[in-house]
Image (tube, rainbow, N blue to C red):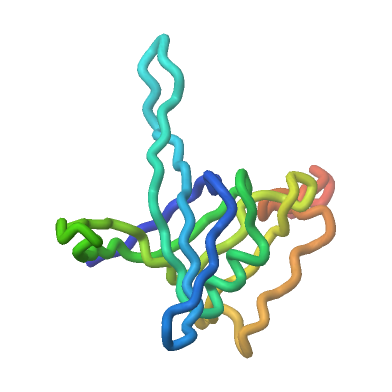
Length: 147
């Protein structure tokens, strides 16, 4: 099994290009904070290179900028090529399959935008976020609870 789930912030604006055959491809790096922090030290982050193809890449390039928080799902892929000097080069990156905004509108983003229809939303249409939506949760009053 090869599955990756990341939540982090873009380190710079995404770069949208096209292959020679015209297929859109977007590359970007996500900074993901590590869970563990040694006492007396600052939290460390890992910088993960990501790539998104076609419509997913176009959407990420359109809606995300440096510092925007993203949640994504994909798989790890490695590639090898020779540079102009004939040296072998290697890259490991996450190939994005699905993505979501991971910050609220008040933080500078939207609350949800799927890259593909995962089967969860009939006709490729996600439900609109409810008014008052805060990072995927609705504030409720204690009187509204059924118990």
